[in-house]
Length: 247
Image (tube, rainbow, N blue to C red; front, side, top):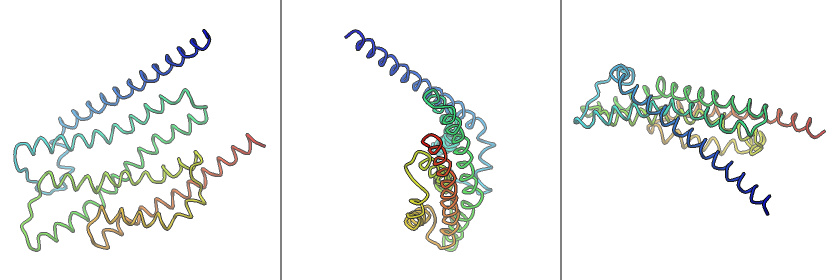
């Protein structure tokens, strides 16, 4: 009975220690976000010209200044906090991993960050200018168009942040393959359905014209095919490892 009691006490202590460590990670991430948020607010006059792309943005009132500044600073701070939090979570789970698993898991942190930055860059430098110019030209044919800060920022987020997330697709596919949830064969079988889903997503985040949708859909299809290729490599590696462990 005493041994059971001692075992329960040890389990409770371990659980409490895990919760304490997780709380520490959340607090560190919150502090990192706060520092980044304040930093972007301070340097907002230098950041805004980079985001406005030369357009004259209209503020409808004094509160719009606060909303716009905090919205931009918050979005940028989140983008930098996600990789930081990912690294902290990796440190949290590292003690329960083998050296090989720890090394493999760590590679996902920079991979996720790089994929996200690539998606954001593609959206900001290619997709957003094309879509925004198309919509502006369409509206200016019949109206005098004023660009409000709120609408501009929301459109910028939609066409960049969404692509940053979608560019994580190959990483997700490789991860699901590495844990045995998916196989390259399964990914090939659902390829047509995946294309349909990607086409729907591209239609939702672009204006209703063929060129804009193709502009977004094409890299998504390429990313899916890249995910299949990387999934094949991951699957072969896992099979070789299992063959060594279970000859």
